[in-house]
Length: 80
Image (cartoon, rainbow, N blue to C red; front, top):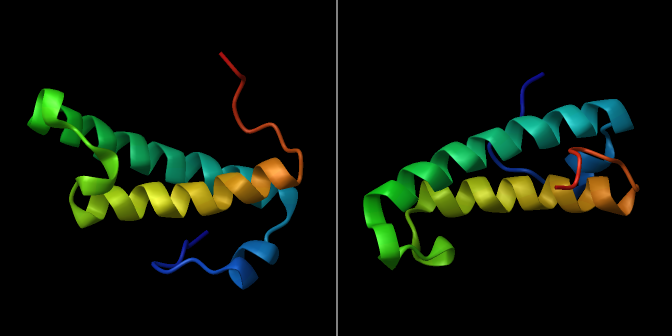
């Protein structure tokens, strides 16, 4: 499945529950990779929303899909 560069609520609404969980998982992985890289680079100066565009974009894309999954009451990952 191809995830568009620019996510919209309309596109997210077309996803069934199983696909939504898959997309959420992929976007979460992308965000974690960007986040880890930026944390290593900046150390104590890390600030998510002041990071590079790639980091903020990865977070925003993941959050849009994650919010939809939560609104559908889908369990994406076990809560720790």
